Image 1 (cartoon, helix red, strand yellow):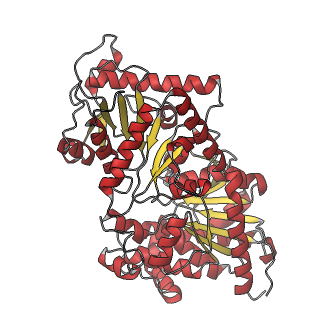
Image 2: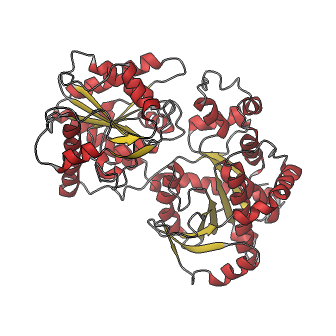
Image 3: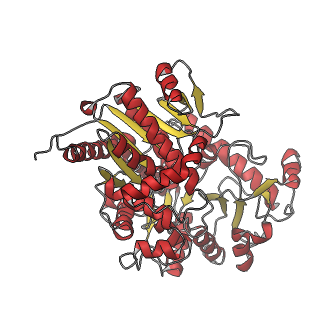
Amino acid sequence: MKETKLAPKYIFESSWEVCNKVGGIYTVLSTRAKTLQDQLHDKVVFIGPDFWIDKENPLFKENKQLLAKWRKAAKADGLNIRVGRWQIPGEPIAVLLDFTPFFEKKNEIYTWAWEHYQVDSLHAYGDYDEASMFSYGAGKVVESYYKFFGLTVNDNVIYQAHEWMTCLGALYVQQAVPEVATIFTTHATSIGRSIAGNNKPLYDYLTAYNGDQMAAELNMQSKHSIEKQTAFHVDCFTTVSDITARECKSLLEKKVDAVLTNGFENDFVPAQGKAFNDARRKARKVMLKVANNLLGTNLKDDTIIISTGGRYEFKNKGIDMFVDALNRLRLDETLKKDVLAFINVPAWVKGPRVDLQKRLEGKQKHLIPCGDSRITHDLHNQEQDMVLNQMNWLDMHNRESEHVKVIFVPCYLNGKDGIFNMHYYDLLIGNDLCVYPSYYEPWGYTPTESVAFHVPCITTDLAGFGLWVNTLKGSYSDLVDGVKVIHRTDGNFVEAAESLKAAILNFSKADSTQVAQMRKNAGKIAEKALWEHFIKNYYNAYNIALNNRNKRLKL
């Protein structure tokens, strides 16, 4: 049968992170939404969990007039939903679902999943039940909308499910409304992340691992099962990078149909010129003020400010390598400039340090450190903290005589942290260099955001972003190109940490003209990662899904 180029008229997307800012998928969806909304105005509907029934969600604005008749019909069908606008660029329609009523039918739902798709829910624990009830309910939402508005196969409806948490809904939609074309996007396989998170070598043995066997060993059977069965049954199976595509082929035993590279929009970046320069100066002033008050130093504006950030995944995000490389740099006598490094990673924070707050409020300069000069906030588990313990083991204590100073910022930079009181992006612009030496990183939004602010960065070839940057050059990218990509494997920690140290040292020796060129090239890389370039990958996936749906329906 000859395939024709097909495009959707309606798109439903379901994710745990719709109007729920918890990770990188939020960035994928929220930055791409405007591009889709511009092309399919209000025929793009995002479905997310409703955790804010009794309190205000700042990311969602309910509109009781929007789709009012359908909402009433959906309620009669037992769907407790709120309809409104996601408060992001494009303001797409968002449907928030209270999924708790489905817990009463949990066993019945799991029996259905086993009988039709051999999904093993027997070993479920933790968040599996919660995610599955939401996912099933999201599928019911799509079914209700489709039937209420009398949509047909000619409307080319797409349902895209993100991550294992929404898989059950994709399977339900495919059976309840077979005219809807289904797409499943895994942003990181549950078993791959688990292997990496349990300190097992993922890459050296990737082709040798049996995903089912590893799922049993790591008590991941249910999540792995729903993910694997969905990958095999949807009309189009996708992931976000070539490195994760290899992971899918080995661990899920299913080759992806398309790679949906993660783009972003740069509307959060100040325009080049006075606004950009003012924002950068303000950020540096605040970071240096906090550092000098904490350290009891007088670091000047020519200090090289570097940072890392992201979730507190000590090994996966390469936080351990960042600290190790900084220690190597600290001991290198050829370093002649002051380097101030921030580790912006939220931990189990108790609150801002009161002694540091008092110093910041005062006007006098302090020439002695403020208690433990390595951390800005108090932690609940400070004695067990991995960053501080690694620094203790390496004897890193921010001594006055040393050029390298390292400060752990263990909180969300949301503008209300009590120390910086600025948002993450508003501080990011003040960096000279950002470092993300990831071990497990399907894509990597943190380096993408870094180059958006014209801040050169260092990443690895185990990150999807790093591999993509290498394809732009046709070889390993270096800092002169705006992004340096370090080679990482399961067994080369020492060599990679030494390469990272050398890269930071070389950056410290670059003159202003060289740094300006790095910053310019970083901005050029960011321009190539905009959704206007990457959205075509999604339309390719839509076409694959719709054509496979037609084959499934024998159209």
